[in-house]
Image (tube, rainbow, N blue to C red; front, side, top):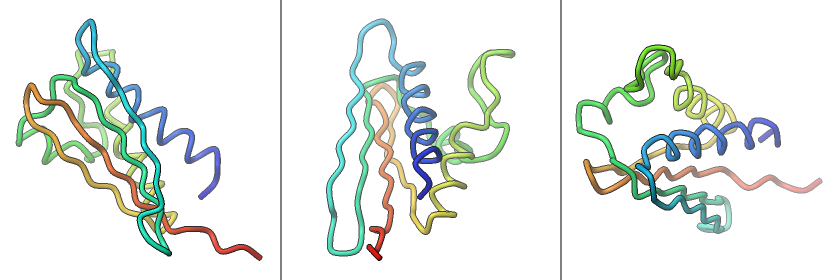
Length: 112
């Protein structure tokens, strides 16, 4: 995966977490090799979480829960597209008032 795309994906997820955390909260990133072929990146926050209706639309382009003028609704859509283009997967777990965890799975690059 292109390093700039990787950085953009993390920034988009982190920005959503920042917006979901009220005044005080936490955002964690953990990377690990999940097996011989994949690396897993887990981003989690203890923000407001999402309802099931919002979760179902979260990856749709132009969908946002932010007030008018505060978000484009492209962040998670762009993240998903870049990860899938790199051969990876994005999944997430969220519950209202319990935060959100986004897990990115990317294939390991094969050295030349």
